[in-house]
Length: 616
Image 1 (tube, rainbow, N blue to C red):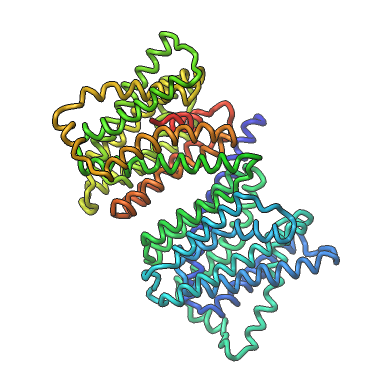
Image 2 (image 1 turned 90 degrees about the vertical axis):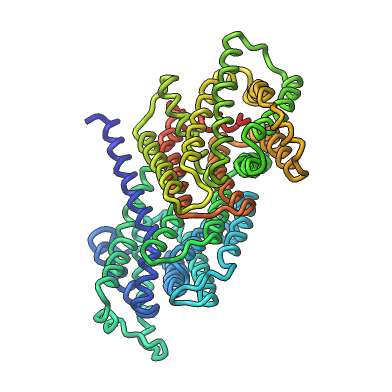
C-alpha cells in the first residue's frame, strides 16, 4: 500500500467519524429532552452524570490515568464546577420546557459567547466581524422566542422562554469551560480533561439526594423507566457523551478546521428536523427565519478579516442579498405582466447601463474568437437562462426559484467536466445526487397539489434555466480571465439586451405603459441594484478579502430568496420547500468538499464564484 492510499484511507475514516459525530450531536437534544421529561430533571441529571462519570473513570483507568500537576487543580476545579456542572444543570432543566430544535439553535450561539469571554479574559481580540455576528445572532434569538406559537404540549409560553434562558446559561457555562480549559487541554489532552471534569461534577450532583425538597429518587426512577426512556439513556451515556467525543477528536486530528467548523452548522438544522420527526415539535416560520439569522451571525463572527476586509464583507453581503432578491423582484413583476414584458424590463435597461459603463472601462480589444465566445455565452447561455427562468418564475413562488438557483454551481462543474475536460471527483458525484434528490423533492411537492401556486412544469423550467447559466459561465470564463470579470460581464449583458427589442409587441408596450410607481421601483431594483451595483460590489469586495471567504456567502442567496418571498409576497413555507431546499444546499456543499482543499481541482468552487460575480 502506498503512502497516498494510506492517507486516503485515513481521510475517509476521518470523514466517516465526522459524519457520525455530526449526526449524533444533531439528534442528542431530542434524547436529552425525551429523557428529562421521562425521568424528571433532577433524577435525569443525577442518572446521566453518574453513568457518564463511571464510563470515563473506567476508560481512563486503562488509558490516560488520572494524574495532573497540583498547580493545575484550581483551574480544573473552576472549569469543572462552573463550566461542566453549570452546563449539565442548565441544559437538563432547560430542555424540560424548551423544544429540542429551539434549544439547539440557542446553543449554536456558543462560538459568539466563547469569543466574548475570551476577549474579557484577555486571551483573544474582539474583531468587528465578531461584533456584527453577535448583533445578528442576538436579533435571531429575539425572533426565535417571540410570537404566540412557543407553547408545547407540556409547557406554556412562559415556561418555554424560561427553558430557553436556561439553555442560554448552559451555553455561557460551556464557554467558561472552553476558554479556561485550553491550557489544560494543551498539556494533558482533551479526552483526559473532559473525563476528569465529568467525574468531578458527580459528587456535588449527588448532594442533591440530601435535599428533601428536590424529591430525588434516581434508583426508583430507573426501575420505572420504560424501554423508550432506557434507549434515550443508553444513547446519551454511551454515544452522545462518550463515543462521539472520541470520534470528534479523531476527526479533528486529521481534517481541516474549516471542514470541522462547517459541520457544526449542520447540527442545529438536524436538531430542528429531529425534534419535528421524533417528538412532533412544530417548525414555524419564526423558527426557520430565526435559525437562518442566528447561523448567519455565527458564520459572520468566524471571519478573521485582514485590514480593509470589513469593507469587503459589507460589499459581499450587499451583493448576495441583492442577487437573492432577484427571484422576488421578477416574481412580483410576473404576477402583473407577461414573461415577454418582464424580459424587456429586466434586460433592456440593465443592458443600456452596462453598455455605458463599458465605454468608460479600460478593456483590451477582443479577438474574433473572444467575440464569438462572448456572443454565444450571452445569446445562448444568458438569454436561454433568462427566458426559461422568466416563464418558470411565473409558475412557481420566488422562494422555490431561489432554492433551485442553488443548483447552478453543480451544473457549472458538471458542464466543465463534460466540455472543458476538467476532472470531477467522488464528492462531486455524491453532491450532485443529493442536489438532484432535492430537486426531485420540489417536483414531487409541486405535483402533490398540497402547495398552492406551484407548478411542476415551472420547477422543471427553472431547473433547466440553471443549466443555461452554467453554459454562460463556462463559455465566458476564458474571456473574463483575459479581459476582466466586471468589464466582460457588462459587455455580455449589453449583448444579451439586444434581442429584447424583438419582444416589443403592442401588448408589451401597453403593459409597460400601465406600470405603477411600485413596479417601476422593482424594475429599477433589478436593473441598477441587483445587476450593476451588486456585480460591481462583488468585484470590488474581492480586492479586499479572499475569494474563498467571499464565495461562502453565495450559499446565502437561496435563503434570502426564500425569506423575501415569504415576507414580501406572502408565499407559503412548506416542508416540501424546506426539505428540498436543504438537500439542494447540502448537495452543493458536499460537491465542493475536495474543490476547497485541492488547488488542482477548483471547478466546483471557483466556477460558482466566477459565474455569480458576473451575473447580469
